[in-house]
Length: 455
Ligand code: NAD
Image: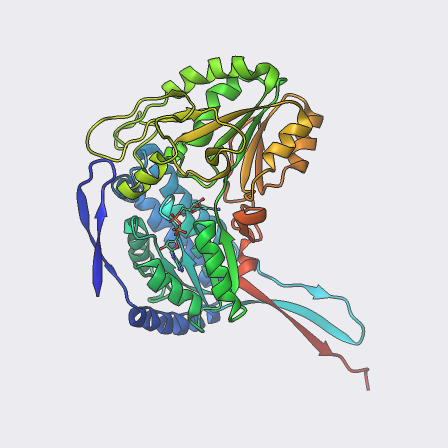
C-alpha cells in the first residue's frame, strides 16, 4: 500500500497523506457494496428517502467544516467553498424525493396490463476530478443512491479530503455501512479497476476528454453504462446591442471563478467588432479589480491554482511573446498563484483552441451573428456559454444555434441542481442533475401481465 501527500496550494504546506488503495482493496470494497446495495434496494422507498434526508441534515451541520477543508486542500475562496458544501446538502435534499417518485409507467395494451419498473443498476463507480471535489461527487452519488444503487467513489489524487469526510458523514447520518464508500487512489489503479470490474455496471466519470475517451473505450468491453462530463472551451458572446458595461463587469467572473479551473469557464470572449475597443476599455479595470489572495479571507474572489504541476501547464500558455492585453494582480511568494490574464491572439492559436483550465482568457472580435455562431461552434467541445444581447429574437436564435449543453443569456449561470447539466460533442455524454438524473442510474424493465377473459 502506498500513500500520497496532500498539499495546501495557497501555502505549499503538507496537510497530511492519504492512502492509495490497490486493486485488491477495490475488489473487496465492490464486493461489500454489492451486498449493501441488495439490502438498500429492498428497503421501503420512504425509508431510503428518509436516510438521504438525514444525510443532507448531517452535511448541513458540517458545512463550515467541509468548507474549511476545501479551502485548505483546493484553495477555493471560503465563500465559494461554503456554497459548494451547501450545494451537496441541497443535491441530497433534492434527490431524497426520488425514491418515492420513481414510479414507472402503466402503458395501455391489448390483452393485459403493461407496467414498467425503474430497476437499480447495482454498484455505481463515480470518478471525480480535482476542481470541484465535493459538488461533482454529490452529482453522482446522490441520484445514484436515490435510485437504489450503492456507490464507490474515487476522488482525484490532489483533492481527496472533502470526499473522504463526506463518506464518514454518510455513516454518521445512518446510511448503511458499505453503501457509499470513498476509495482514494490513482486513476490508473482504482479508476481503471472500476472500469474493468464486472460488478460495477455503470461509471460516472468527470474529468479530461483524454481520460474520458479511455474510460468509454474500456467500458465498451462490457457494454458498461457511462455518463461522461468532460472538458470545455466555452464562449462568452458579446453583441453590440447588449448592456456593454454589465457584460464587461461580469466577464472576469465568467472565466476566473475557481481560478479558471472550471469546466464551464467562458474562456473565449467573442466581441462584436464595432464595440470591441470600448469593451476592452471596460474589461481592463474589471480584470484588475478581481481580488486574488488568501482563500480563507472573506473578500478574496480568486485563490491559487491547485498544484505546481498544473501551474506549469497553465503558465506554458503565456510565453514571453504571448499577446497579453493586460493582467490582474496575484500574491508573490509561496503558493501556486497566477494572475488573471487577458490575451488577444489569432483565432487559430492554441490558447483559443485548447482548454487551459486556468485564469487565462482570449478575446476575439467577430463581424456579425453568423460569424459569432460559427466561431462559437468552432471547437470540439460544447459544454457551456453566455450570450449578451438585449434583442430577444437574437438571444433565441443564437442559443438554438450554439452546440452547447448549458447556455445563459445576460448572465453566466450554469449549474442549478434542479436543471439538467452536461455537454454536447466532446464535452460529454448524458446529463447530470435535474429531475431526470435518477433515471440514468436505472434500467427500465417492461412487464406484461396477460389478463384472461372472464370464464
Ligand atoms: P483527469 O481526467 O486527469 O482526472 C479525472 C479523474 O480520473 C481523476 O480522479 C483521475 O485520478 C481519474 N483517472 C485518471 N486516469 C484514469 C484512468 N485511466 N481510468 C479511470 N480514471 C482515471 O481530469 P482532472 O485533471 O482531474 O480534471 C480536469 C478536467 O476535468 C478538465 O478537462 C475539466 O474540464 C474536466 N471537468 C469537467 C466537468 C464537467 O462537468 N463537464 C466538471 C469538472 C471538470
